[in-house]
Length: 159
Image (cartoon, rainbow, N blue to C red; front, side, top):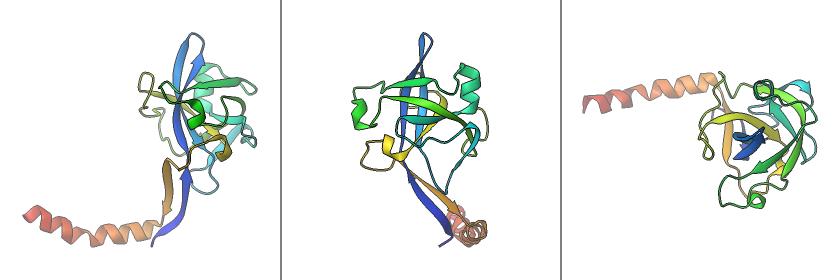
């Protein structure tokens, strides 16, 4: 009740070579209805060997449409356990409401800091299960639920 849309997303952290250094990127599968992306240049990826890149990352690290990116896991995990591809071509520059500031969060490999994100078609991923569930909820339903929880919070505080 109160859920307007829900969508599974594949995600993974990968190392990408930039100059003489590896930077950590977060890879997401493209979504249809939840946490969508706005194309600022080019287009969204259609083929499993294509990606759309975080526009801010593109500017900061000097990437352009048409550049190719090769992935490394940064761990003992084989790349084929996560992705069906090891190299993709940048076909679009995107932004999303997923990130409200320039910070992209912490990662599980490299220096622990996510430098940017890439969006790939779902069939670029070889994982058997989704890593994330993105949900759009009704604000009015959320408010009603939060309000009905207030007596519970009061009873916990009193004990």
